[in-house]
Amino acid sequence: MSRQYEIVYIFDSALDEGQVDERLAKFHALLQTPEHPEPVTATNHWGKRTLAYPIGRKETGYYVVVQFDAAADQLPEFERAIKLDESVLRHLVVLNEGVTTAAAVAAERDERDRDRERDRDAESDA
Amino acid sequence: MRGRKTCPVCEAGVRFVDYKDERTLSRFVTERGKILPSRLSGMCARHQRQVATAVKRARIIALLPFVKGFTG
Image (cartoon, rainbow over all chains, first blue to last red; front, top):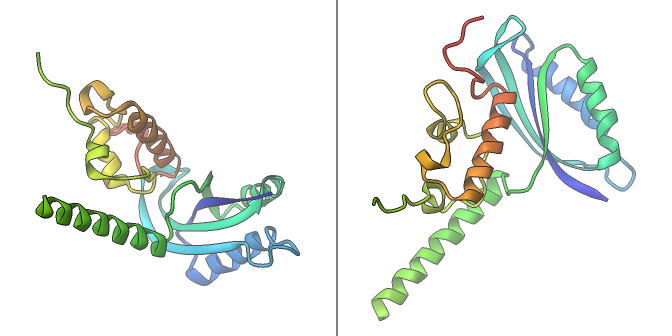
C-alpha cells in the first residue's frame, strides 16, 4: 500500500542548484516502481537558509521540501542512500497528513472564506 | 478566579500545525527555546500535542534551536 510522505532535505550550501537536482533525481529514482512511475507529487526549493544551530561546522544549508507517494517497505533503502551521501547534512521523512501543496492550501483558504461569507449571510438574515 | 484562556490555534482556525512554519511555532517556545506549557500558552490538549510534535520536528531540521543562546 502506498502512502503520502513528505521529506525535507538539507544539502550542503556549497552545492549549486544543478548538483542538488542531480542528487534529487538519483534519490527519487529509488522510489519509482512499475505501478508508480511518477512518485514525486510536489517539489519546493527553499534555497539557502541560515541554520538555527550549526550542523558539523556548517552554518547554512540548502533546503528542499518534496512530497511523494511510496510504500513503507521502500523507505529503508531510500533513506540509506540519503545517509550515504555526505552532501546531505540532514533529512526528515514524515507522513504527510495535512494538505501542504500550494494548490491544496489555496483551495482550503477559499473554502474557509466561503464558510465565513455564508455565516455572515445567515447572520444578516436573522 | 481568572477565566480559562482560549486556545490560540483553535482561534486562528488552523487545521494542521505545520512544522515548517517556524515563525508561528516560535510563539510557543520560551526565550531559551523550551516548549511553552499549555498552562501558559492556553492551548487545548489536542493543539498542545500537535505544537509539541511540530516544534520537535522543526528542531531536527534546524529551523528552531534545541537551546537558544547556547554556544558550544
